[in-house]
Image (cartoon, helix red, strand yellow):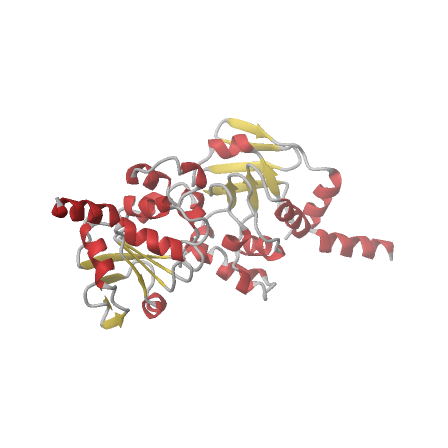
Length: 168
Length: 168
């Protein structure tokens, strides 16, 4: 998945402390495929929860999203659901880094989180460091160029692949 | 709330390991009123999650429901949502005891959990130790008389109140 510079869509809103166990239960860590992981994503929260989330494009959450045990599959499962970005008040460090490595754009923007509700439409401009919601633009610190390049090519693996291809 | 002997209604289904933080976040433990707690119950899971659960009567869940930090308010919050009973594969000990003390019927019945999906109708007969789902009756160990009396009068506080009134 190559990340678009403008990410637009409908918001599903979580609260604080959504941990990696909630995102994908430990017993599914035998999988690495986005489709397979997405089938079981957020399963703890009810039978139809994954299907429900597929109707949304962007997750918006409170503090400490992705806390708990570090697992790359939490990011992969979210991407497998078709989620294009996560905006939160804050992220757990390991989730943050896993997201960048996998090419999932994540943005810390407490003001946007406070302003949005389920179903709202937002538009994230990664290049400009802005999120548009109704008539208001919210700002977030722009990613360093190195991280933006990772996101643009679709994550660390793709980045290394293209870098090694160039050097050959 | 006095517990009816027959508890009937529509099922919302959770997976494994729904912990007490998910049920009611720590910052709301300053409250003890069922209504107030219910407003914030399951808030972590999305803006409208508590309202959604109010459309259901009985929670059905996997293993270890109510695990995590022991807090009476987790039971109170669930009761405040109008939930009449919880059926799970298993419960955390402290949740189990808090539920009985507060007068919330809880039943361990793995076969019923495996058989049900969101929206199904079930009927729990606490006295007989049976749950009806479609054409099938599932059995669970009947509560000891002492626990059934607690549930019937609406929990431990009511029980002690009525016992002390009788002895006066």
